[in-house]
Amino acid sequence: MSTHDSNAPESGTDVAVTGSGGFPEHFSDPGHPEHRLRQSDQDPKANKRAELQVVVLFLISIIGTIGFLVAYFTVTPAGTPSSIRNSNLLLGLGLFCALMGIGLAAVHWAKSLMNDHEKSEERHELRSPEPVRVQAVEVIKEGVADSAIGRRGVLKGAMISALALFPLSIAVPLIGNVGGNWDVSKFKHTMWKKGTRLTLDPTGRPVKASDVTIGSVFHIIPDGLDKTAHPLEEKAKAVVLLVRLDPRDLKIAPDREGWSYDGIIAYSKICTHVGCPVALYEQQTHHLLCPCHQSTFDVADGAKVVFGPAKRPLPQLPITVDSEGYLVAQSDFHEPVGPSFWERLK
Ligand code: FES
Image (tube, rainbow, N blue to C red; front, side, top):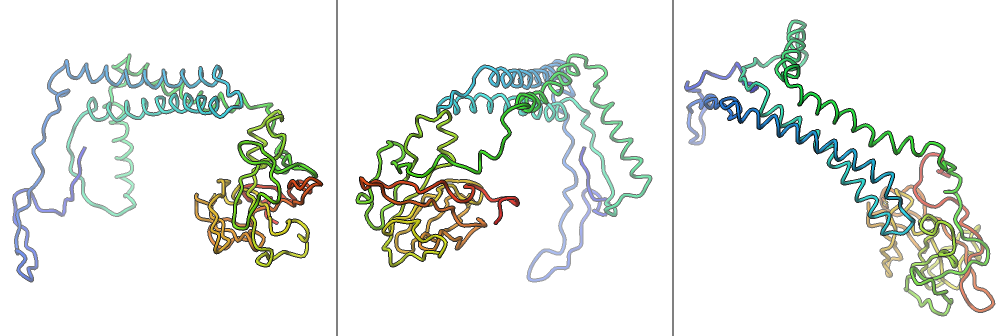
């Protein structure tokens, strides 16, 4: 259906325009282009072909939903990055086919099978008068009748199957997680504890204070991470960025005296905005930038936010050295790491 403004002149008439600066005073209204019948309007075979195409698109959606469910139950992430990637890829492909099939089928159905009337409509106030609203309901009913859903049994069956199956791709994962571990208190702690050595990510080599020169930055994980039951989950919480500054540049808050060692300071690497890894360090300004939304933290001043959407500083890990000169944690973080939300705001 197409609409046009009834205030516009009829096709082919001339329109007066206030001319100035050499612009023409009249132009011809080009009118509506000639209505061209679609192939499916003229050829019953083309119409049948279009119907079949719509059925195939719904079938793609059905296969996508079934594929999603099969992937959900059979491709279980084993905790390694590659297995998580494969699982996500298959789930994403299934969901993509399920949604794309329904979307394309609906568009193709409307464009090639529903009646191709052209109608003119008067421009009106934003809120339609009551008779028009009643008329709109009639038009919707007409559209339903127009889709010939009653007559096209196979198409109707395919559509109902696709629409009925698709919600399973949302409901099954939700139901599958009922009874899962929803204890969110685990997000308030990490595996850092007194004496845990700071080791390099990903090699796991312990770091000595003498290895860290002024201006250098190290990506750190806790010693023993690979021996935990859920190394990826623990790593996601415990990753740390280690920086060494000239001790004279550090502004140490009174309650954090002794949390750093000779200018070496450790902060959670997880942005307090929405959790991206913060990793871009600018040595001159001591600023640490999150690449996702440009939150910027001042390493020299308690990792306070100097720019961007993050609402609180990066949590600091208290560190010291052990008897062999290796950097170790004094304790866990003193506050939850990661994104801030209302119940975490201090
Ligand atoms: S996640 Fe870091 S600024 Fe948004």
